[in-house]
Length: 179
Image 1: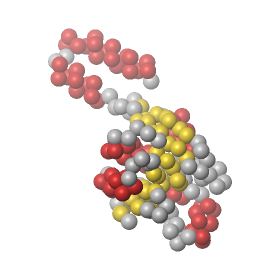
Image 2 (image 1 turned 135 degrees about the vertical axis):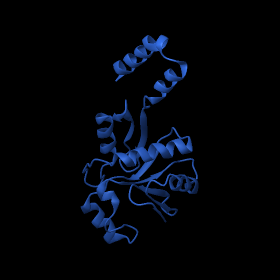
Image 3 (image 1 turned 30 degrees about the vertical axis):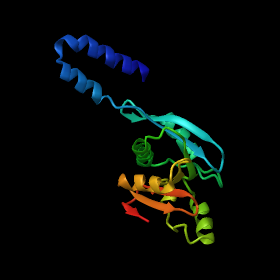
Image 4 (image 1 turned 90 degrees about the horizontal axis):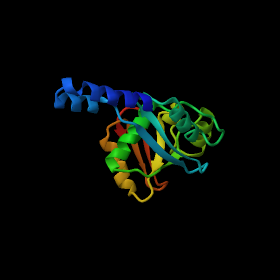
C-alpha cells in the first residue's frame, strides 16, 4: 500500500508541469483515506486498533482483527461483521470527533447465544441482527449516552436503540428505526 501511495504521489509530481493546479488538487482528493477503528471488548478485555479500509478497498487483515474482537464471547464463534456497520462506526467517530476506543458490549451473537439471552430477557429480539453480524452495542466512556444516541440517529444508517439502564447504544445496518 505504501508503494502505491508513493507511486501515485511521484506520478502527480511528474505530471505537474502538464496539469493545472485545480487538477492536481482534484486528483489528490480522489485518493480515499484510511479508516481505522479502536475497540475494547468489555467482556474479554481485548483491544484492537486497526486499519480496515485503505487505498479504496477493505483491508483483509484489519477485518479479521475486528471480526475476532467482535466475536460471540460466550462460545468464541466468529462471523464476518457487516462492513457497512464498520463504516457506520467510523462515521459516528467522525461525528463525535472521537479518537478513543469504543467500548463493545455486544457484536456478533450466535443463534445459540441469542436464543439463551432471548429466553432470559424480553429485551433481546428473537430475530436479532446481532446474529447476522449487522448489529453492535456500544458505549463511549466520558461521553453522555444521550449524546451518543443522538449522534448515531443523525447518521440514518439503520436501527438505533437507547438502553439507559444497561448504559449502551445499539446500532445496526437494518432499516432506519429508533427506540
